[in-house]
Amino acid sequence: MTQLDALAEKNFASEAKVWDDMKTHRHVIADALADGLAKQFPKTIR
Image (tube, rainbow, N blue to C red; front, side):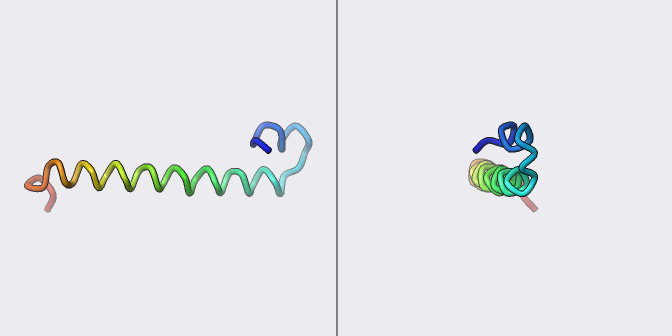
């Protein structure tokens, strides 16, 4: 179920779960990108 579907059905518990999953996914992607940048530019990281 997508977040918009859950909201349309007023299923707020499901919407909250989807939102939490989306935030977790965003953090995983951000961590991977940050690690790659740190490896690419090791001298600029303090």
